[in-house]
Amino acid sequence: MTTEYKLRRGDGKRIVMTRAQIMEDLRAGTADAAELGSIPQLTEDELDKLADILTAPGRMVGVEEGMEVPVTHDIGTIRLDGDQGNSGVGIPASRLVGMMFHERALGADTMELGHIDYSFKPVKPIIAQEMQAMEVCQQNMIVPLLYGAMPNMGLYYTPDGPCENPGDLMKAFKIKEAQDSTMKAAEHLTRDMVWIMQRMMRSGADGVNFDTTAAAGDGDFYATLKAVKTLRQEFPEMFIEVGMAGELVLGMHGEVEYDGKLLAGLWPHEQVEMVAKAGASIFGPVVNTSTSRSSPWNLARAVTFVKAAVKASPIPCHVNMGMGVGGIPMFETPTIDAVSRASKAMVEVAGVDGI
Amino acid sequence: MGMPTTHILTSGMSGIRAAGDLVARMEFARGMRIKEAKECVAKKLGVGTADLSDEYVMRDLREELGLGVITSVAGAPKGFAAKMNIEKLLGTKINCCEKFRQQLR
Image (cartoon, rainbow over all chains, first blue to last red; front, top):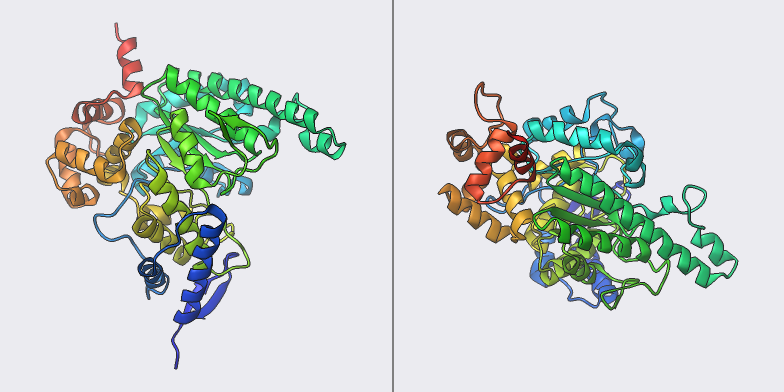
């Protein structure tokens, strides 16, 4: 009788597969990434290793001793006191308490301070509050403490912001106007991110985590790269992490270039070159999870992309492994069996420098 | 909370329970990849790279070097004091410590 293993689908639902079915999906997943990114597939040995990780009998797995990596965080303490929108659990704790809890109760390697909205733009009116919070947190914390926020360029478009919405303009076939509006929003975004981080650095921040970069497409990525370059010139010792929003930079503008390279359509192993060139310290590659595919398919695909990014990268890579990315199911409370297996696979097969 | 906690337990370096914060600092400050960062910190601490995630080795070593420990030891360096000792150990400057020194009269 063929042994069956309990695994997960991309939406988190329990599925059952044989080893042969697992290997078939692993091969299909790595082939998909290789074809899309024009990158090498995983070897048969690496696929066997992934299969071993996926079929390990315990509920949880762990990396081999000596292979541990530091973990950085997006959202930070907001996961404690935030609401469901931030995947928060609603514990009414201050951000300082949340940080100390992560450092001293959970053993977090790093932490970050963030505004409850977790976007840069809303920080501007309350910058003094954030500076004060950073000062107080730095007085108490030992682990590296970043300021984290999303570039979230969508907030600069009408009705929330000053620039006309490119989506509306494109619907009216005003392509040039849509592109101009994107670049105008990018200027606002770069200026705001630099302005905010100049003040957070004055308040003792170790650096910044640009989280979900390029969520609004190539203009968003361009604005962030420009902010990274400006901040690196002003603060040579600053810790700068750039985590992406998705595996592919969407061409919402379509023709934006940075340092002579078209940003639309870049895959993780190409994104990292831009991020490193701008002056970031750490890159956070993202690979999206397909909710209708199996965990072997998603994990092999994600590991293939991330392994290529790690190889191409001149800086450390901390892979994004939240809900719906990095081979983890797209579910609000991802199952521990799936998270620990994806985590181990990224360290031991993709060779990431951190998570 | 379950997801980040799972990553910490599966793959993380345990922060100040061991030496995760120190390795993270070298990755950020010097752009070192994981292998180089671990070798650098291990050399400075006089331990092996596998010891960096070993709470048994790091607990007393951190207290001895004043790098901050996870349990609340009365009188032991915390916050800025611990980070200033980390600056000395790693040979790096930490931004908040610089700001603190600039404010002293």
